Image 1 (cartoon, rainbow, N blue to C red):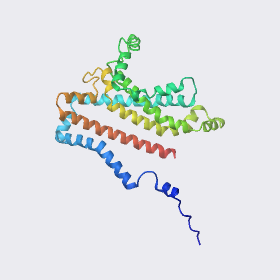
Image 2: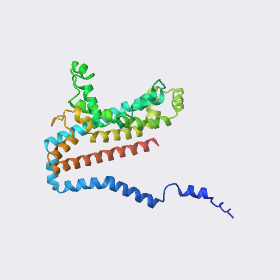
Image 3: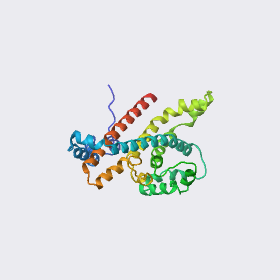
Image 4: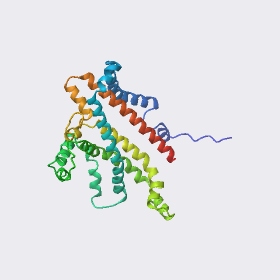
Length: 285
């Protein structure tokens, strides 16, 4: 005969039930919250754009000015996210692995783009990189223009996207045991081999997540870019600014068409990045 299981105490029963309500109630709260705050506004946007019909959406969303704005928004966001994926990982590595005076201050400075209003960030970047600014003047002497160019747009997106990579990679580095790297070195592996075979497989999923977050932030960024870009149509005009411009001209149909295109492309890009993350996790396991 199998012995009977001991009766559950009140504390054990509470632990088995969990802190949150049951699955059905929690799922209902979750779906309602996401539906009202996320899906409902996006659905209203798509519904408004659908009133134009396929031909109207195609005509409004593929005009020459809109195509140039798409190219700059998505292209600059991609370049900035790649830069942040590399240098954000390096910043996280230094903050985790190397003790130095003022490390906590540097760690706090990383979060400034989170808390700083984007308009303030745009004004500060413009003041620094303008042809008469602290960094803009020496760069202009070398023939490099940053402010009011596409390079300035990338700089602004790097500024606002850096914390996403650093804060995503940091917990992974904290959990990575340095003794594994030491064992790799003892076994005769070079630093490059240790990084490629031991460290990089652990960091890769986190770097992809940080890249995705920085890319998504860069695509939709407005305040920090609008000052430093110069807002010249076909050259330095980003898609969010074009949407605002069309709204100011009471061209609501054109604005919703461009916004719908950006929504669709952003969704597909993030879907692809999430698929790459899953493949990276499977390869690691």
